Image 1 (tube, one colour):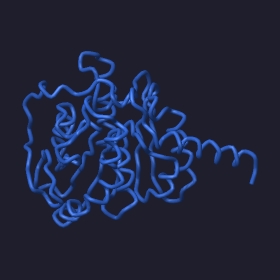
Image 2 (cartoon, helix red, strand yellow):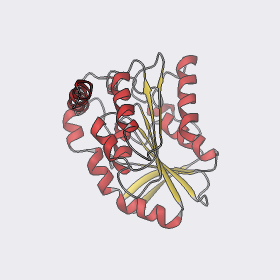
Image 3 (tube, helix red, strand yellow):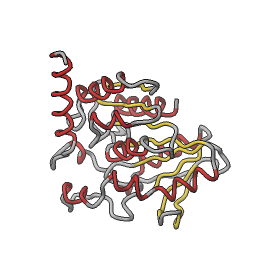
Length: 253
């Protein structure tokens, strides 16, 4: 094995260790959603879906194409996330935003490390199988869009036969080794100023994917934005709004 290959493996291992930990006081906690800002919503919340999930659903229920959106640590009630879901639904997809945290999203009164132990995206991807089985029974194709915590969830789903495509927006907890297991087309949208999954780590993902055969992938790093830019951003800043809109367009495309 050449020195360049050894260096890549060393860097990948270092990235894996770092990706496994999202520290307190991290960008994951920046700009938490204000639930009081909820406006008019095109969808509705439904209860008792397979697996015992509540979910926000929007878009044409008759559509043969479904998009499952996996939230960040703040959960499915975030107004901007529901706005994103409505926009995706308006393009013809049936959109499901499950409450993966079963009424217990992260908030500032909780310890993030402890909360993650009981809300693992890996475990969630196993527990959600009844819901995905139901969606697949009714529809032809499923895509998953994941934000932060949801990026790891989406990556786990991409190792199964339950989806056809995934999109990761400023993911957390994702490792380079995860890219070896992905079975479906994958899009990764990173941020230049992301300290959780910095650009060099995203490029490690891209390098790993480039070594795969038959896996379609697309990687883009958005300039001058940070972790959370696609689903938790300053709505009064035109630049961050434009970046989020561009990320949404990439996901839909």
